[in-house]
Amino acid sequence: MGGPVPQAADALVRKLQSQSELSEQDVQRVRELPVIVKTLGPGEPVVREGDRPNHCGLIISGLAYRCKFTDEGKRQILSLHIAGDVPDLQSIYLHVMDHDVRAQTHCTIGLIPHQPLRELLDRCPSVMRILWRETLVEGAILREWIINVGRRNAERRLAHMLLELYRRMEAVGLASDFKFALQMTQAELADATGLTVVHINRVLRVLREAGIMEFRKNLVNVLDRHRFIQVADFSPVYLHQHPAL
Amino acid sequence: MGGPVPQAADALVRKLQSQSELSEQDVQRVRELPVIVKTLGPGEPVVREGDRPNHCGLIISGLAYRCKFTDEGKRQILSLHIAGDVPDLQSIYLHVMDHDVRAQTHCTIGLIPHQPLRELLDRCPSVMRILWRETLVEGAILREWIINVGRRNAERRLAHMLLELYRRMEAVGLASDFKFALQMTQAELADATGLTVVHINRVLRVLREAGIMEFRKNLVNVLDRHRFIQVADFSPVYLHQHPAL
DNA sequence: CGGTGGTTTGATCAAAATCAAGTGAGGTGG
DNA sequence: CCACCTCACTTGATTTTGATCAAACCACCG
Image (cartoon, rainbow over all chains, first blue to last red; front, side, top):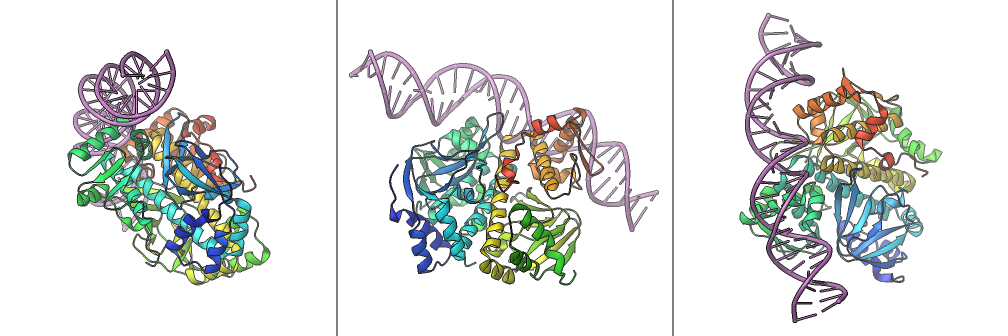
């Protein structure tokens, strides 16, 4: 647990600017938000289902995920989050958390208290608009996740999930050249795709033996881009990464 | 296709008020939005993937759904929408549609042009906040849809989907007493749950023969509420229907 | 009265789950 | 330093769930 760090909101500013134009004044106001920096180890919760947090957690570095459990104890990973994301932003207006947010890797999180954030948003509709837009993009990503889990077979499902993550990491400079570091275990990949560990293991083998991609030593490496995109059934429109369009 | 109707935005006003307090002035401004009323027959699109609409579609009556297709032509229904919803609200800030929105039943839709809506939102942060909140709740519903499709078996999946729809309809006075009208075909239920028609038919039979629920003549009728809720693995927190909490 | 769209049922098949049993790499403590 | 433990990964055998294929059936409608 650390103290307030003025520059901690930078990851947020960068994210906001990447999608839309922010005025100098707005940037300044975002930077002035009080932020408490905190680090979390793998698996540690940012917030849990049922919590009523009074702050949001901006991811400064690391990978985090949302998850939820059935009454039979099965886990589903609902989304993955990278630097610049605020996975529990909803808690600003929805008071009870309906899912967990957890660090997947070691993470640096910036805790932003709701009160000053709400005040900022009420004063600066342009900032509110940009964050709302983020929520809308996130909705689009959730919908793609639904069709992924609901209608694609295991290979396509896994490939799609990985390619989406790659494209998002690439957009913020965390990956390039169709390679990226990924600390997820096969069990976590299973929970993200709605499959089992055993089956994920087999699918990885099939993709590897087909020369399409490999996942070794925590590194995803796409060997045949064209075929990878094809098996993933991936079209990037839903990521809405080109705000002008 | 009809002309402008001043009272058409009422469904929206009611929805907004049900969740949060709106000032008289804000209500007035929402009512003054220009709205073109239009009716659509079953299956007709409100917007399609790839469109760049310049208006949003408020559902005044009827049931609509979002859907998306894989490259193999499989369809996934992503969400269901009832009176008061604006399923393509995202188009106000995300210019290219990444999915279809279609009328499921005969629908009355109020088309609200983006430009005056954007102006209203910039002038009234409280209205923007409420619509953003709607987007956040919708995100929560999408996440529950993911765990439903990813981790629940066919019976639970179908029961959960129906119970969610019931609870939402109940909240706006469209259903009560654990019964509701539903014109969906079994093929549509299949596309919503990520199953096949044949299997939906069998699951409906199992639920019927177990005395849990029946679906006949376009009417869903829950016979054993306790067991239905249990089978559905349903907990309503994620609907965030009690804004005060 | 034949056509069409939706439902139902049976038979068979396939994808993925489950069960079971290793392997292998780090990490810890005796 | 090595024995051992744990956690992740891997592989095989078997089972289950739900998909696919095929054929009726049924109600409504022009």
